[in-house]
Amino acid sequence: MSTMKTRVEHDMLGEMSLPEACYWGIHTQRAVNNFQLAEATVNPALIHAMAMVKKACCNANAELDFIPQEKAAAIAVACDEIAESKFDDQFPVDALQGGAGTSTNMNINEVIANRALELCGRHKGDYEYIDPIQQVNLHQSTNDVYPTALKVATVLKLRELSETIAKLQDVFQHKEQEFADIIKIGRTELQDAVPLTLGAEFSAYSEAFARDRWRTFKAEERIRIVNLGGTAVGTGLTAPRSYIFLVIEKLREITGLGLMRGENCVDQTANADAFVEVSAIMKAAAVNLGKITRDLRQLHFIGEIKLPPVQAGSSIMPGKVNPVICEAVIQGSMSIIAYDTLVTECAMQGTLQINEFMPLLADSLLRGLSQLENCANMLAKHATNIVPCPDKCRSLLEADPILITAFLPHIGYEKALQLLNEFTASGSDNLREFLELKLDPALVKKVLSPHSLTALGYR
Image (cartoon, rainbow, N blue to C red; front, side, top):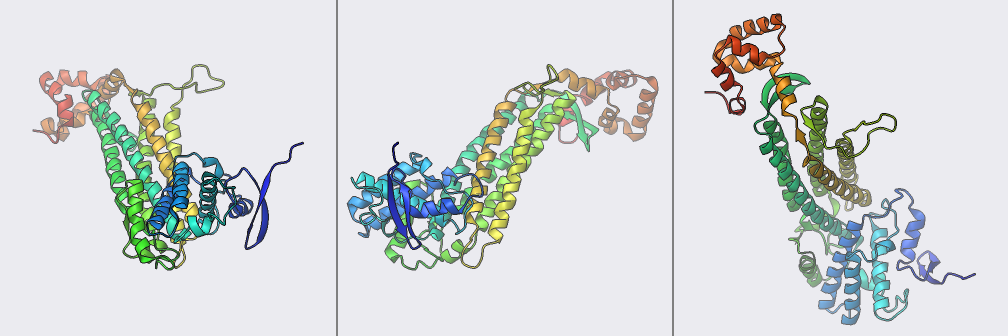
């Protein structure tokens, strides 16, 4: 029977045996033992962004001769590998943890150190050569590294989300044009209202997504200001002034993002309202997705459009097909709104110079952004294949007494009411045909044309 090889590490609480193969160290293992809440590990997007931040810190320290070039080069390579997802399985800490993210910071410090040691031909745990704290975490604190990494991860996700929403907007704009001449009845408060076109109905959806696209794009501006170099409380204590200014330049080079150092890093460390603003924009997009998919499901039920069938809808009813994509997107939207509530609550619960609840805030924000992108992708793919039902739209419209409203500017309210009473008494089921008998057919054709029904006012 083979015995697993181990190594022994120590910290202020004592010693612990670790598997020789793992890249994490004793601080990470204690966190794994302590935190078992979410049954999910830290979001990979945050880990990858932290690796970029660590590389920026390493490069700044190396340029200022605080870390020897050979060690810095190995640390930088390790950071690159982590940012490229090559060590995702080495971050086992629960997403929800005490300590404002210290466990995540130590996890990445240890993985970087041990991978750098390996690159230098040394054994994992040889911290006298490259130490997770003395070298990898040099001139840093969890309190400046973690929020900075979260902002980097958020900006990158926002850029992906903005592109996805742009595609979604484009799909609905094409449907707007495709459905431009299909006249149908409008509805307010789930009751029939005045006519419009199916294209006009879809134009409202494309405009809503256009606002989401713009807001998502602009949201990046809210979180470009970072507190890296502020160390524990934003004052920069224990970090050299030269490093504080240089590290932001290094981070800009590595990420390609227009980041800037906060003029008041005490504020940037203590207050998380910028994340709340981004989350609120995310919530607004989720509200639009949820509302619009509910509308699409309703229009499908009425029979004015057909949603593409994607799977069998019942285990007992043959041939039943349900609007499952819409239902999934609605659930995703509700979930995103719940994440926004968590982000808001976490930001509010911060105390004095630190926000202790950054792990939950980060997990909620990044999950919400990913889920929002997934919802938008699903809907864009689904909506591409929506088919209109013009015959159904026309039959519902022409049988609807509300259609008489379009003639008010031409015949007045009293005449319209008289005709409507005659129509009801006639037993006819087609108001258009009835009006063509009672009014000038040319007037009926003009008033009920797509152009007249959707023009801004009448002439």
